[in-house]
Image (cartoon, rainbow, N blue to C red; front, side):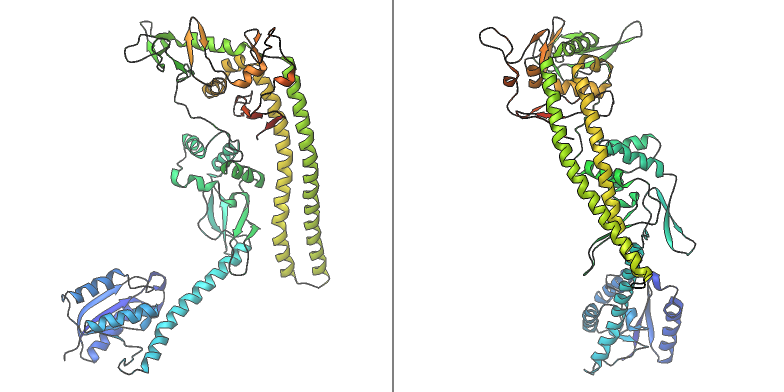
Length: 538
């Protein structure tokens, strides 16, 4: 029977530099073998692909030709068995498939007569050896990568805001690049709690950057920006947090603050509006004629000056000047005069809350201080043991690297305690001032602030009629705590209409205090009011 062979030559990208595995070397060697043994070459298949599976383009095309009889041969020649496969189970299956097609696979440098049962043991060795080599190489790579991470090195592609570089020892490090300032700014904006991730991305792009929506949120979850490195758990080793050797872009306190925002613990509700500055009440008014919603738009007259109106659609002729309606609503807010007794009660409740929380924070701070001192003492003891020769320098460094991140985390918590308490007191004071001057605040704040005040004040849509903004349902807390238009609107005595004692003015269930911009344009206040106290959600 005439010998007709397909020459199969394979090399993967990572083997190109290996002289013994080069394409030319394999092809020359296989051609000479065929000439020497009188074998006709019917096809030469060249593959640049991994041998972990048989899902390879060139090999699959060759197999399809054999199955459809477009290619006729009785031998498949290759240099070694690792050129054929690096996966023993797959290799046995493919040998069986080729045998059914009348093809005998032959490794000319590792010849085996498969008709002899004992030779299958040698075949198993040839097929398993490359697989073992792959596994060993992968394990060595993993060990080296974990060692580098434990040293605080970033070994993969640099995160945005950094570039990959080699240090003086030819080891990989990351250094800050020109995008670092905008990413730091993005962290700072998100930490305020006033913007969502998508809003921050748009603001960054407006500054001339190009951040894609799909991956932008991953930036804020990467601890590398604050200098932390995560070494994931492996076998008996637990997950570790180590300090990176690269320069951090932000502080750990800022990173932790952003994580609070992302998980919703600090995220305050914000609204994206697409209304004109001149039409803040658009969507909050109903038509006094037909009861449908009023919309708003601008109109340019003969003078060339644009005037804005709230108006109805679909045949209704209701149309009023926006300035008149806006002024009327501002006047309504200015008529809210919070009575002194309520303000005094509010202040007393806050004092009680501060005192109670202050006692709790003192205890928490004490625990943090003890933990910080305890960990510092551990490092000092390890240093002393190293100096006394009880442990070697490498053991001391390992102890130090495992303890220092814990100290950094505890110090970050300590800083957040102080920052949160300061913000807490400041925002409450500004919030109370804002509530007492709603009309003034509404007049001078931006469009987002105006609409936030409207949402917080009105519990249903209002109507503009006879020069006044009217509504049947103002925020219940305002009704209970303010005099509106010079007269108290809260709970009245059935007999004389006099104000009852303060104890009856406290509402039962939780009610929302208006979310307000309090002189700091990006600071909003949210408070719950119940029978026991005002409780700040911050």
